[in-house]
Amino acid sequence: MTLIPRVLILLGGTAVSPKELYEINLQDISMSGTEESLSTSACVRKLFRSLFMADVFSELQAVPTMSVIVMAQGHRNCGIDWFRPKLNYKVPTRGKKLTVNLLCSHENSTALSTCQEINSAWDDYIWFQAPVIIKGFNYFS
Image 1 (cartoon, helix red, strand yellow):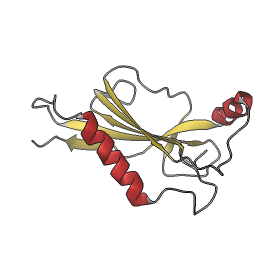
Image 2: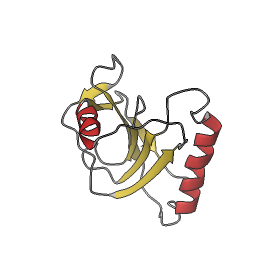
Image 3: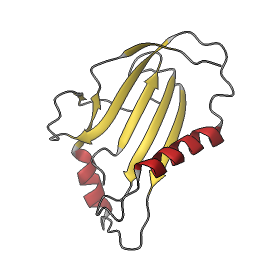
Image 4: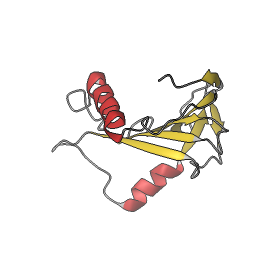
C-alpha cells in the first residue's frame, strides 16, 4: 500500500457536499523498490489520458466561480502537521464524481494475503484536509 492511497479534489460546495469530486486512487501502485515503482511522468500521462478519454469537461456550461478543497488519505500516525486530520470524514456520494485509478502490476510484487490484513490496515488510514481552500477557481473554455 502506498503512503497516500487516495487523493480527493473537491470543487464547489463544501467538503461534505461538493458539486464535483475527482478521486485519484493510488493504492495499487507498487512501492517495494525503485525498479518497480512508476515514474512521475508515466503517472501524469495516465492521469491526463484518463481525464481526456472520460471527456469530463464536455458537459460543462458556464459555471460560477468555485472553491477547491484537497483531501488526502494517509496513516493516522504519519506525523504531517500541515494537513488537518478529519477523523470521521466519508467520501461524498452526491455531485459529479470521476475516479482515476493508477496501478502498477509486476510479477514480483507482493500483496497482502488476506482480506483481514487489508481491512486492519485500512482502519489506520484517515482523511486529511489541506488547511487552505482555493477560492475563485473557474473553468476556461
